Image 1 (spheres, helix red, strand yellow):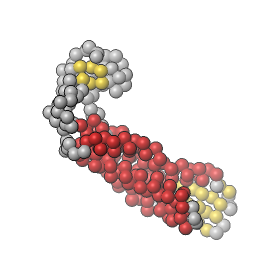
Image 2 (cartoon, one colour):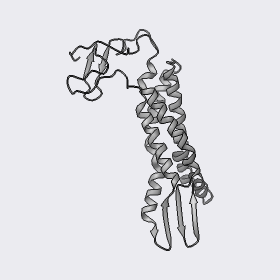
Image 3 (cartoon, rainbow, N blue to C red):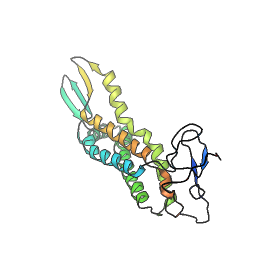
Image 4 (cartoon, helix red, strand yellow):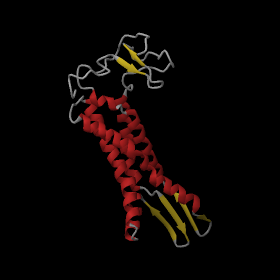
Length: 219
């Protein structure tokens, strides 16, 4: 722990209900909250294993999300298939540097950053490492802030597919890559939700025990 003199909730045997916010003392993990009936857990159940499962699935889909076409344009001039990176190159060559940079960051770098950061957080939490705990906690908060921008490509393709549909002249449809990209975004979101950031601080003897005695008096 960062400061052995600090009394933590785990050391005081306090468990907060994730639904109604009531704090219970000496609560048994998995026992129902007497106020709202929600199961009480000092930490998210099986957090590390669930996070690994989502991260592995997201990493597998990350390659097809970037290699397969996300948008297919059919016109009188023929059919063009665009991946995320080919779209970035097209906007860059066309002089739309800001849009190219935005798509590159939001659709390529952000998912890669989230995958890398969550792998780091999960590995250090699994090893109960006390390495840069404060920075790791801040990193998780950054992931929560930037995660909402990961769906930019999905929104753009969906908008274009709905607007550009002139039969015989031009038609835009979503490619297989957009499904893989959307799956990567959803899986990284689920991984972020499954990871319990409080595990970052569970490095000392006052870490939550697997079982604790129950008493029905709220704090």
